[in-house]
Image 1 (tube, rainbow, N blue to C red):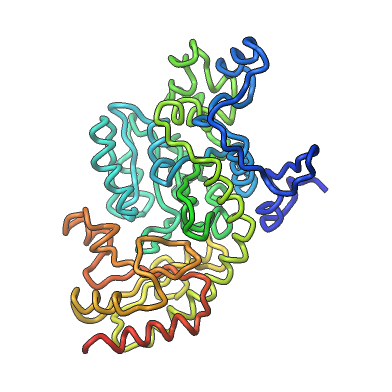
Image 2 (cartoon, rainbow, N blue to C red; image 1 turned 120 degrees about the horizontal axis):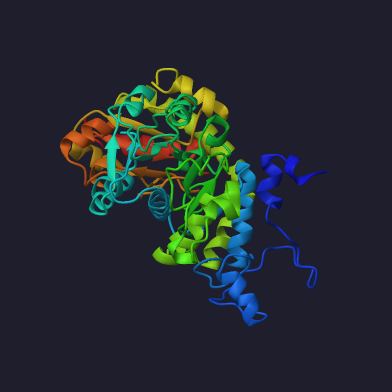
Amino acid sequence: MDPKNYRFETLQIHAGLHPDTETGARGVAICPTAAYRFRSCDHAARLFELSEAGNIYTRLQNPTTTAYEERIAALYGAVGALAVSSGMSAILVTVLSLAAEGDNIVASPFLYGGTYNQFRITLRKLGIDCRIARSERPEEFEALIDGRTRALYVESMGNPTCAVPDLEALGDVARRRDVPLVVDNTFGAGGYLCNPFEWGANIVVDSATKWINGHGTAMGGVIVDGGNYNWGNGKFPQIDGPSEGYHGLNLYEAFGTAAFIVKCRVDGLRDLGCCPSPFDSYLMLIGLETLSLRVRQEVESTRRLAEYCLRHPKVRSVSFVGFDTHPSYENARKYYRYGSSAVFTIELKGTLESTVRFVEALQLAAHMTMIGDSITVVTHPASTTHKQLNEADLAAAGITPTLLRISVGLENAEDLIADFEQAFAQVEE
C-alpha cells in the first residue's frame, strides 16, 4: 500500500519513521549533536551551496527534527515543514520570509495577543505594516490589499473568541489578488480538526506547544508549505531572484514548489537562530502518535462542560463554536472535523473581582496561559494573554473583564463539572 494513501491516524504514527536497519530500534533516535562530520571538503561545499541535501549544523537541520518535520508535512499533505522553537517564531520567520521594509500584511482582528503585539509593534519597527481588517469578512481584507501586500493572515479559529473565518472565501480573495494566504492553525490540532490547505491556504503556522505536543512538556512551532503558490509572479524577489546569501542562487528555480519552506530554513533559521532542540522534536513526535485520540476525547468533554456552563445561573453567556448560537457555527461545521474544538469561553455574571475568586477556587482545572494540554486550563485573557491591549483593542477582540477561556484536557468530564460546581459555590452572588 502506498504510504501516501494512509489516513491521518496511520500517518501520525508512521510518517517520518525510518527504522534503524543496523540496530532494529523501533523509535526515532534523539540526536543530541550540534554539528556533523563532512565526508570531504567537496561534500561540505555542496551542502553549503544547497546543491546537496544533508546536515550541516543543528541550527539548520537535525535528524530527529527532520523526522518530525516529515510527519507534520505528511499529516497536512504538504511539500515540506520546518520546525522552529515556538509558535511565535513560526509566525516571525514566515512573515520575514515574505515581507520586507515597505511591505504590508493584512490580518484578522481576532488574533492571539502575542501575535497582535508582534504585528503591531515589532514588525512595524522593522518597517512592515500590519493592516488589521475591521472584521473577518473577505471584502474587509480585500479593501486593504495594495501592490505592497505580501500576505493575508488569519487564525483558523480565533484565540480566544473561537471565531472561524470563511477560509474558502479568503482563499478566493488571495488567489484573485495573487497574495499567499497564511493560516495559524493552532486550534486545528496539527491538521486533524482542520486542514486549511483543503480550502485555499498556502502556508500554515502552528504552535506545536499546544495539541501537537499535547502534554505541556515542550515549546515548539511549525511552518508548513502547501506547495500551491506561484513564487515566480514577480512579487517575491527574495525567493525568485538572486539570493545574497548563496552567491545569487534562485531558490524558486532550484527548489520549485518547495522554495518558500527552503527560504524559511536557509535564511530564517540561519539568521534568526530559532531552532528547536532535538529532544523537544522527539517529544513532539511522541505527542503526534496519540493526537487524534486525545483530540476526540477533548472535543467530547468540551461539549459536556460547555452544556453544564450554559445552564449555570452564575454564567452570563457561553461561547462554544459547537452550539448553533455561536456566530461561527456554520463555518465550524464546514471547516472543522466534528464542527467543534476543545476550547470555549464563558462570561461570568458579576465583576472582575468575583471572576478572579472563581478562577482561584478551582482545584482540578489549572490557572495557566495554555491550550491543548492534557490538563484542563482556565485562563483569564484580560489579565494575561491580552493584557497588553488597550481598552479599544480589547473590545474589538471581544475580551471583557469577566471572560474566561477554557481549554479542556483529558480528565473525566464529570470530575471537571464537579470542580466548576465547587468553585461557583465559593463565589458570592
